[in-house]
Length: 366
Image (tube, rainbow, N blue to C red; front, side, top):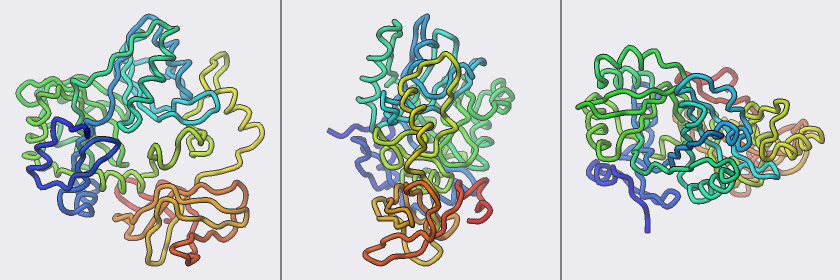
């Protein structure tokens, strides 16, 4: 059985092309994936991300538990509503999932994890939480809509209760707060996202989700599917779990070293493996590639370097750049001239620093 979000009938009424995504029936586009991509880069688009798993953690030792569970340090979270991106690792330093954690107080945090990894993540979190006496409570009563783009925040703010607007407008990046939406509906508004654009990810009670979606549409926010979400996050240099990393990959190898905090006296799961890997030197690195000639870079293609073979992880045509870009994992060391095997033809590509796009424009050297 495929799961459906509360907005499923709404997507179908809009003529969306639906696909199976991690066991969920989700819209890949509503007609033109390219136009949806450009709408987010140039104005405002919205995504149904209600398939994401929201989990509330309660208990006197919740902070201690998260210090043990996550490679990043929740000690950074001191203000109500502040958020942190982190990997959750196994004992070998492999990535079980990447997630965002929100701080309410020392005994209450909220975690949002990926849809396709729900069962695995919940089993792992519950197992690790038990010795700390932490209650793990999934929140299927919430739907989630991401509103992204240079005009996204303004369009959302216009729909909020007048007394909430100034507070939500001042919300910093990677922070969240409660607010009232259309008709007084209760919202949890987070200034986060997965597109490289500014905007909000909004948790809304499931029974109010259709009304919020319709209010956003009436405000000129364009529905966008998972296809545009994928090209947007790739341009923005953001990893996709299952494609760019998994249990066989450490954060060092996924270019996520910035999410690892090796602070004194904190023995998080996977720490010993990460320290060993760092001391010995990482054997594989993740890099950005650009294809300047015609053609498309796709997941699984072979990458040829002076140090041996690698492979394309996420790869796609980038609508903002009008050329193909990709992440690749290749052997460490100076790679020399890099080529990609596209249907038996070795095509030269350029190694670049990513993100490929920032603030709607190509980054330097792309």
